[in-house]
Image (cartoon, rainbow over the protein chains, first blue to last red):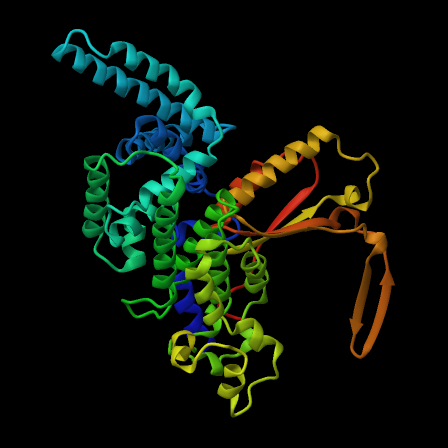
Length: 369
Length: 116
């Protein structure tokens, strides 16, 4: 029994992960080649650096497509050079500097091209942007990252496009990894990302952190994307597995990043709390042979307390006008903590949870698993 | 995946022989903030010196309480982090970036999903 479950979950965990054969522990005595070691380090560094690299570049060049290409160019350069030269001491700075050089080259080429068409013109303006590059990239990346989050979840994009683009530019996932996560053919995801970038460019979407009333709507769009990613992991709509924890982890991490960047937004904290509470039940939701187990039949010893400990501070986060969407779900769908404090289920367990919630019974089935 | 990072600071964990300089503290805080902003940190904590700790040894039905301080100075844990990362390699990369100049930091993956 155990082995069946083990293999299932190991498989799930690898859905979005980097090739497990590479990250699996090496047999004793077997030495890795320097190149493999460098590749593993590059993968890890890419995971850490890619979002802020793309964010910093996107603010400068103004569109995600070009920014991502520049970042990818830097990655390729690292893959070419680091296996022989070794990983530099400050890999993030190295990647940024390399991308920055490419950006300068790009602008120079564009400028030359423009000169050919119109001898005089906006040279002065371009020069100024060239200077801006030096300062733009070294500043605090927090706002850049937030700008990138908002841009990738822009309402002009379809939900599918927003999800794919967010995982790509913020999660640092490859097209293949996203395709595997959603069980969609790779070319479809590739198309989705290309189209999303084109749509953003055509709609002249500005790289900015929205303010005022616009911010509420835009933030809702971001939260929706994160929650969609989480839900796809939590109740997979395709494939044999009921849950894909890697997608859940990805969503929670994005949520945590957003909560750090927007600490006064109650909706964000609410969403993180909601996801953490759900995630704490992940391992109890599926039986040994993959069958779903309803909430009341779940072995509560398998609920991980850790996640709910993390969740509650978020659920007590600042309250505000726009908090209802997530908070209602959070309260309605998390009998978890209340149940934990109550006696173990009796045959009439259903009645016992009902008495713990003020929601009308018509809402009941929504969180049963 | 979640990993537990154990700060085996050795004798340093036993008390502030030389308290950290403000610069060192600032550097550490900057590092920690970076981890938090990247959504990596799930939990963290510092521990009191082992002189305030207790050990319980089990031998069949017998229980022996041992008062600190504990002798294995190199193995003494001064603090911990719980991180969410995508691979051990990512945890290694994060830890390499820390400003620590001594001690051993141990990364252990938290058993999840199966075998609980």
